[in-house]
Each structure stands twice: as structure tokens, then as C-alpha cells.
Length: 136
Image (cartoon, rainbow, N blue to C red):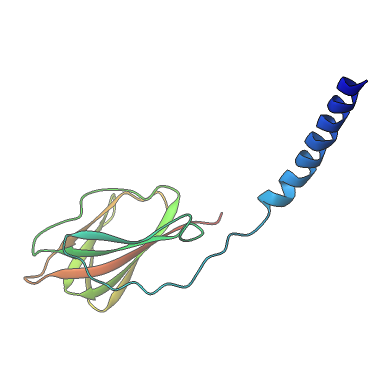
């Protein structure tokens, strides 16, 4: 009899946990406002790093010397925005003509687009990138 009661108690506890799990998974994360200085000793300094700091958005501060590039890459299923703070350059988009820009400017990169950024000026190119999940 005691074993049967323990199994019954276990079954009730398990059932309660299974009922509570969906409710727990639907609780919203608590995100907090942030102020992050744009200070970067290197070439690419992360600012927002995604979950759990944000709901998924990432960003960073980039400084490119004259003639330098960030290198070809894609952000996969994410879209990207570049906020050009200082300098001039070009967005190189695979299969398309280059897109020149001069600060202040914003450059938009669609999802699944292979791209690169090049400093075409004689001074430092500085920009902030923001990457976020693209809604379909």
C-alpha cells in the first residue's frame, strides 16, 4: 500500500509539472534598457550580444583603417543595418554593383546576402551594425 501511494504521489507531481511547463515557457524574459559607450580599441567590438541581453538583436562598433575591409560574410536569416558615423566606404554586395556611402548614412543589408564593407577613404571609417532576426 505505501508503494502504491508513492507512485500515485509521483504521478500527481509529474502531471502537475507537465501542466506547468507550457506556462513557464510562455513567461516573457525581462530585458533592461542599456547605455553602451562607443569605445573600441580594436576593429570590431560587440555592443549587444543577443540572448539573454536582448530578444535576439546583436550589434557592434566597427573601425576600419583606410583601404581595409571587414571581409565577406552573410548574416544568414538575419537582416543588418549599418549606421555610418564617420568616413566613407562602399558596401560590396555579391552579384550587385558596389554601393558607395559617406557619413552620415545608413546601409541596409537584406537577409541571406553575402556582403563586405570597405573603407575607400583616407581616414578611419567608423560605423555601428545592428543585426536582427528577419520576420517572414
